[in-house]
Length: 140
Image 1 (spheres, helix red, strand yellow):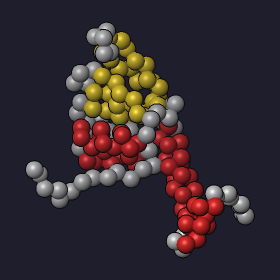
Image 2 (cartoon, one colour; image 1 turned 90 degrees about the vertical axis):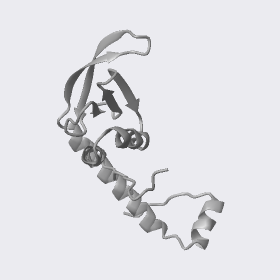
Image 3 (tube, rainbow, N blue to C red; image 1 turned 180 degrees about the vertical axis):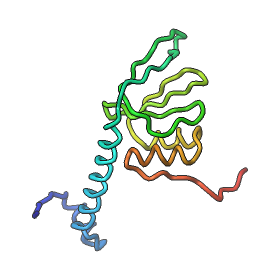
């Protein structure tokens, strides 16, 4: 398929000067997005209703009927879900809080801190994303 795209002059000139292969770059990004969307669609095939006991910031409690699917096997006190609305929800049983994330970037930081690496990797893969795990880092 032949596609014409518009780039502002300055950006187009920079890409040309840098020797950037725009066709390959666009193709790679479209393939990555297709992979991500396919993974999300497959993950949502098993969506159902999850009932969570939540305590709000004001101390009031309620039951959240979350229309979602778990992003990883249950591991301890923290569970991540992908909602039918495309948002990611993290439930922390330790304090009965429910956190909402619109991007996998902030989710990755959150999950990496509270889940075992395998659960974090499983969750990120279910979102069509690569997990990033820091290793070999000196503690200070």
